[in-house]
Image 1: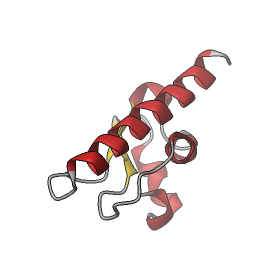
Image 2 (image 1 turned 180 degrees about the vertical axis):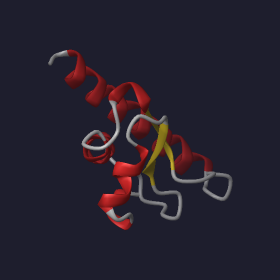
Image 3 (image 1 turned 90 degrees about the vertical axis):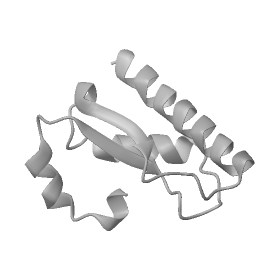
Length: 89
């Protein structure tokens, strides 16, 4: 998501609720929780933590069930990593 978006555009959304597509559904590769966490950390430079909603970048219906499940587990675990970091600050 963030690597394909001009960073200066993110300033336009400060203060708004934002869904961050941290999972690429165009690929069968399952992201690691750390990859998800890195995407969320990048977004937190522009989006307030209480307004950031981690999600996929689109629907996962075309993906095999095991791939979709793995991606959702990575999304949950990556969000948990960042949540714990924010709580420890």
